[in-house]
Image (cartoon, rainbow, N blue to C red; front, top):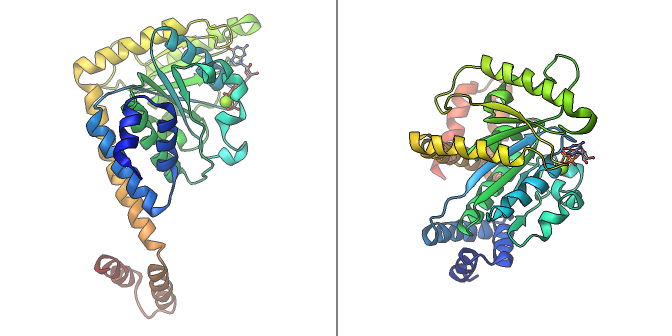
Length: 326
Ligand SMILES: Nc1nc2c(ncn2[C@@H]2O[C@H](COP(=O)(O)OP(=O)(O)OP(=O)(O)O)[C@@H](O)[C@H]2O)c(=O)[nH]1
Ligand SMILES: [Mg+2]
């Protein structure tokens, strides 16, 4: 494969080349992995562009797709180029979440300044995380200004998305009653901005109340060094009526500008790069354990341990020695 040629095309904002490049990073074939790594490096050197990476999470039905459609369109109207990616560990659920509701993103998917890439049908979160992170790098190299990374709010995928985003947005629905919808504290602590969606029609008053509840809850959280006064904050929006979108964008920009000036933006990216480096090493080590020879050794040592012929510690040491010797 002509890596340089493909890299040139991606940097020149050729959409088909970008789609091909993403297909390459999605592949788990060893030779593809090598080519993909070379391609990413090639593009990184050709195009040191930086996009604003916005992670977006919310439970099924909260309006993520509708929000991405209207907010993405709004951003393109501001003259920005927008890429949409997804981390969906449960994509087996609907066979690729974004594709499943392409209809909800019809306008955006036809927009020449937007690029939507559905989640690949991989179930292993580690694989999806790597693929998305590399797709983010490719979209950045292709000069997108904003990259929206969507995830459905179940399980660990929020953490994965937060670890590859500059801003993390939590989308919530208006809720009656005084309980905070069982949103886990850990997830609230990751949020930079909470958007209460569906603040329209009959739901508007409830949305305003929910927003006040969350504003209160956010004030009770421990202050984070990466936040200026007033953040994290809760706001209401209506993705359907396209209301509150420019206000939300203003807040995102204000927060980003502040973080850039205070050094937190670069600091967070540096910490994330380090995190993913360590993650890659761990994944690679785990993969080594799956190799046939390693599995045979694991079985043999496992039996010895079970029969009392070796202690777990000693057997583990033998196993690690065998791995590093290979
Ligand atoms: N009233 C109102 N309804 C909305 C709004 N945003 C989304 N909806 C509706 O909520 C339903 C779910 O919206 P989606 O955008 O598909 O939600 P989602 O979070 O992408 O859902 P999953 O893909 O299943 O996780 C749809 O019927 C939307 O029309 C809004 O701002 N106001
Ligand atoms: Mg959706």
